[in-house]
Length: 166
Picture (cartoon, rainbow, N blue to C red):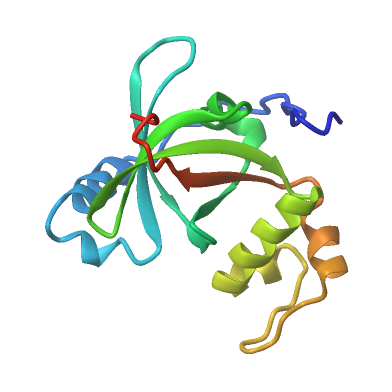
């Protein structure tokens, strides 16, 4: 596994986005975004190969100046491959549109461990599902987080202060 490029898993079966994604995207863009924006943001990006604009509502956690997204079932999805190298996107988070740069980070890297720790602190159920018991008010050890995050992929989303990400 290369330190700079994640291994691209072989798809096991075609993945179809749930129909609810369109409804959720509409809510996140609307003045009623508060119904869903506490745990979801909307990413919009232009595909590297096709040039088509894609939108995807996705669960996120705050991570420093930006956000972290856990890429679930990467072997069955392709959207995240646009971000193997840093790539511009727009996020709609809590009703506000922000230009950003997205980049895939491997969970076993130092950065990936930090992103995983933040994500798992926000979503304790996801941590438990991965085999990391996280109790409210407790912080798991860095080694435990690194062990559990190994093999996982995260999308690091950093706001692009100069607007170049649009």
